[in-house]
Amino acid sequence: MKYLFTLLLLTGHLAVAASPFANPNEPSAKLVLDNPPFGANQMFPLTLRAINNKNISKRDQAVWLKPGKHVLTFSDDDFHLYFKAKQNKNTRKVRQINNRVEITLEAGKTYYMAFDARHQDHKKWHPMVYKIQE
Image 1 (tube, rainbow, N blue to C red):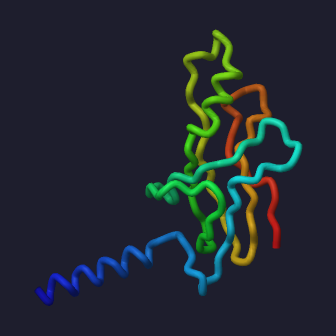
Image 2 (cartoon, one colour):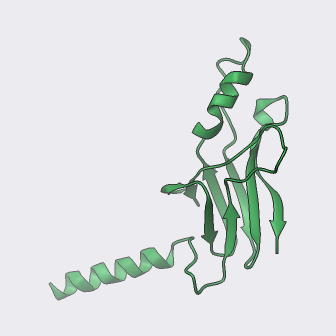
């Protein structure tokens, strides 16, 4: 029983240590996902669904992450309605949307992100950082 408790405790510590989320007392970078630039056409809010290829619970406003390189995956449900509206009969079967981005975060900075669908070619649509604030 004592062995099982120690194993569970150690596993819990490893899971927390591997987490990309920053604790309040740690250096962190903030991602703002729900605030596309005012007046920007065809830029949409994002919903974060995975970090470094590990699924997370839905985050759609802001999140604080540890500094360093991360691969972020966003829900493609957010922009499928827009995509359907822009489709024509020649592109109706094309459903591939770039919903991943690799980003290097620095502590103490805020990164404002949005989904950029301004290009005519939907294959060039992508999540992007449109503003970095110290």
